[in-house]
Image 1 (tube, rainbow, N blue to C red):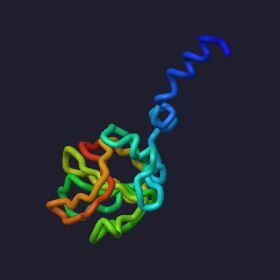
Image 2 (cartoon, rainbow, N blue to C red):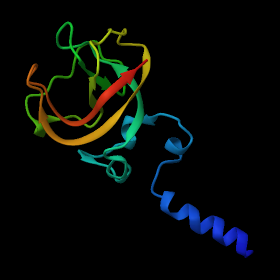
Image 3 (cartoon, rainbow, N blue to C red):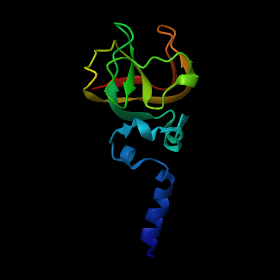
Image 4 (cartoon, helix red, strand yellow):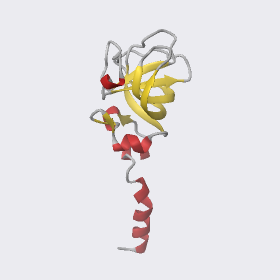
Length: 139
């Protein structure tokens, strides 16, 4: 092995845990953030980072909100959960800087925000989430 090849490969090792999609600025799929009902290794690696996730906007729980649910498949109704024990492994709560402009539920969007994990109950809606993107933008 050439010394240059070895040094290049060694420098890349700290990035080995990151998804190829993130290094190429491609959105992450929701399924990549979960392992069953737990956060995946990739999700753990990306906690606190600004990431982009692809999905669909579920119909908002209330008008003039700064919150919506991103789903992996189009859903005509919002998948509202009572407790974190019931949190599905195919959605993520999205908290935006501005009031949400509703996008039809069957139109795919990319959402970018800071990845957070842990039980959180929204004070305005009562919605309980385990996985969130905060300070988010979408389109």
